[in-house]
Length: 442
Image (cartoon, rainbow, N blue to C red; front, side, top):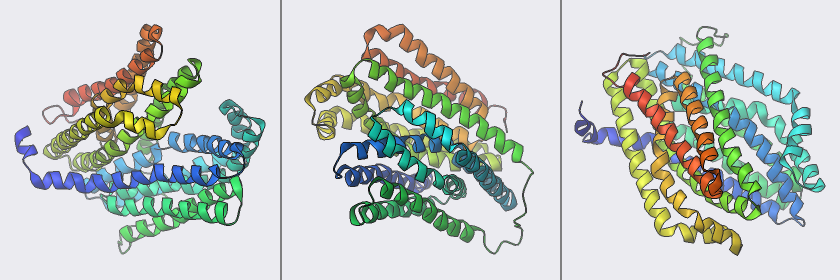
């Protein structure tokens, strides 16, 4: 099928959007939750309350983000089971994912003291910030079992091609967190502990809802049983291992940007933090099309349908490119105004505006890497993702080393090059190995 024929299929475009928009809408609640957390704690008497929540939440978020492979791996293998019309295989992946999530959660609970003892000092802050961060972390960590199982259940729903159902899981979970924040912190005056208990309760409330949603997907199927499923578990573990290593490299590069920015001065690190919000906005939109690619590619891979695979990649790439172009225009025309809304500090404003051109270019350079991440997750090919990320990370550090004399411009050059390399390496692999004319690599 030619590119023109694929792009002229209105039904295929509608399907791509039907899969993408619920997750884009769900992603909007993520910064909203952060804003409510900041607002309710920010109105307490002292700044160190907010600092404590920020540091404690950062460590929890980092741990959950590093274990995000639980969602990705589940989505990929369930989508492939859907494409193969193999419901028992989908259910086996669900059982294996939940078991792995509970094992990892147990390890987090057992290791919570060393994580708190060594992780909090690395994050920095005053004695009061450290004390309240420890209080927040000590409560939130007990939500790890629910949080990790929620990732698996979300992955299952997405893999089944049910983004609207997954959307309700995320919307209602984050909405419950916001409501409990207002009740426990503002209403009952529980302070930092109230914010932590709100998030903890929301995790388990979301788990209950997600379990019901998943049960409704599976009820009435006589082919299913609840015994442990060992067949295929090695594939799930290998895939999750590769995605974990890929995520570790990604986090290393982003952490390096923050670390080097801090060495260049307080104004630089603050201005860069403002600009990184633009990247978050981009990711919220482009991730929707990446989720769509995960499901469609996974289904095509399971059905061994090359035409469907090609269609999923072409449509995902097309709409990711259109979205990126919209952001390029938006940032070019309204970027300065957005910066003025994000900070009142004149020096930080001036710094962010100076480096705004890098952010204007970023959507065009980065959209392919978001899309191809979804393609390779859907194909359950963790090794190419891992290898492409290793090459891109090496490119990132090579660019920074070669251009570090440019100061913060060199740092942004390295970041933009890193995002471009991620798309180029996976795009090259797709053209060589995964396009419909190449040897089927399944």
